[in-house]
Amino acid sequence: MTYVRKNVSTLTTSERRRFVNALLELKRRGEYDEFVRTHIHFYTPDGETGLRTAHMAPSFLPWHRRFVLELERALRRVDSSVTVPYWDWTRDRTRTSVPWTEDLLGGTGRRSDRQVTTGPFAYAGGHWTIKVGVTDGKFLTRDLGRAAAPLQLPTRSELQWALDDPVYDVRPWDSTVTSGFRNKLEGWGRGTGSASWHNHNRVHRWVGGAMLGGASVNDPVFWLHHSFIDLQWQRWQRAHREHRYLPVNPSPRHHRVVARHEKLPPWNETPDQLEDLSRIYRYA
Image (tube, rainbow, N blue to C red; front, side, top):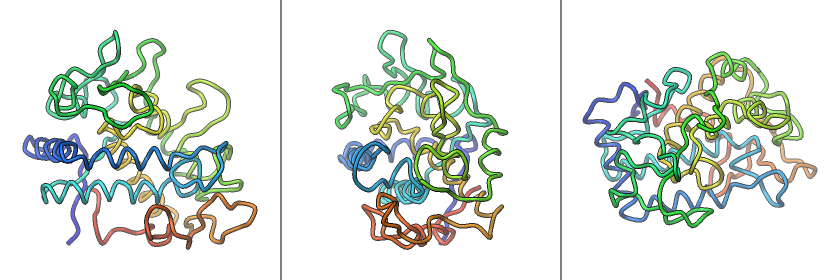
């Protein structure tokens, strides 16, 4: 039976509590940290050798679609009523709006060290110690909006700029491409500073702290952000039905890229198989 992913701003008090409690239970069991390890392992930039699957590649979208689904399945094993909500950052755009509330994700980090001290994921609560990361920090950090160098979340028109591109991706299938829906949504741009970050990437920068880099899964907002990104892929698919995931076929010149019918590590599924999961979930 198909279940529904809701806008986080529409969750009831009970739904918020159940979602948070399921996340905390995965953390208590040690399952959550495995998701962090997976993302770190597959965070392979252009400049490194080996297959690129999670970022800077066409498979950015199917990889994260499968990754969010894996987390959702784990949550539903704890509480079958839970689904992964999405954060529409084109609407809820301030440091005090949803999801930065006491009963959901808590707020920004304190000025001195960016430690999150409010909400259920605050280190002082004893339920969310960072055990897997790229630094030795033990507490969740955030810098919503970047106080020292303010940054704005992407606007609806900036998101639409990506959605309007009818081509899924283009050669050389990496972070340097300037056209194609995938990178316009993923957000690797030219130049330096905030002008070089678009859509998905700028949201990670706006949240700051733990959301910067391969260990970004340590902040639960990662899932709400990527649920919204997944929704955008679905919207793009509906708007451009004649266009699909590219590249279609593997190429010796682009051996670091997953083609449409190739298996997408670490799962035994292809981008082709992940293009339509409407049999499993839908968005409200």
